[in-house]
Image (cartoon, rainbow, N blue to C red; front, side, top):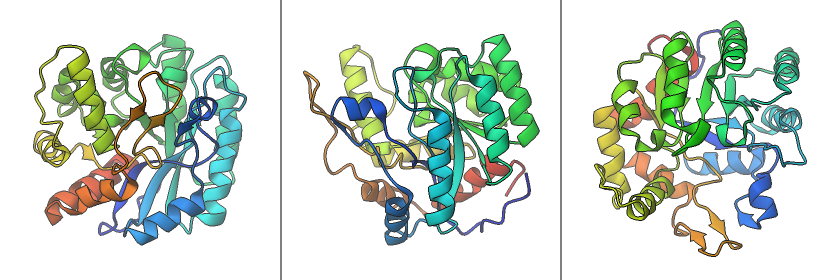
Length: 304
């Protein structure tokens, strides 16, 4: 991939969704379930955000839609309406159609600039470390010099330790563990030792609210002040100054599920704008590091 033409003064949101719909949220009548490129760009322009890494909403086995369709929707929107501000990542589902998907993305690369791929393990049939999958995926990523964003979860295929095993095996592939690697202690310790691995902090407010509930429900003790997201962001930076990357997860800055027995409603103040305010409250050097320098290193490799 060519070196970046993105200014080192730009502010980059490293985690947004554009293209298709969140099928799970749609069928459960939950919010949010969609976002189009024009809407995102308007919000970016109103809040002094210069670029956004974007990928489609996830596609599961139960979905009526395909990653191929969602990737095309993202790319068409990005290049027709994105004003050069959207940096597209293709969605990749680790299932029995992986060969077709890799070929499809190859073809899309002939007409569109794609910066990397997004993997969402909870929707995948196979794990990132399954031998046939990992070797095939590595060859594809290496050929295109793609960066990879991987959704993390507390358990299952999205567990941070599983993703780190892939990162350790393929040290020349740049990988970002989304959602602060769920604050997994092992992950946060080892990430500093792996030059190819990064984490994002998206979406800070809802992520902290999730952690408060997770710790309470499981009788755990917290090493982060999750009731104070600003302090969490600062502590993450102190721990991972060259690895922490800022993002909003727009439009998923909060989740409301009206069908749940326990309404999941992480405060209506958890908006796109509130995520940005947390970034702009930081010292200028820290803001630049997590919303530009680290992001460019993840996207393109090398040192900016």
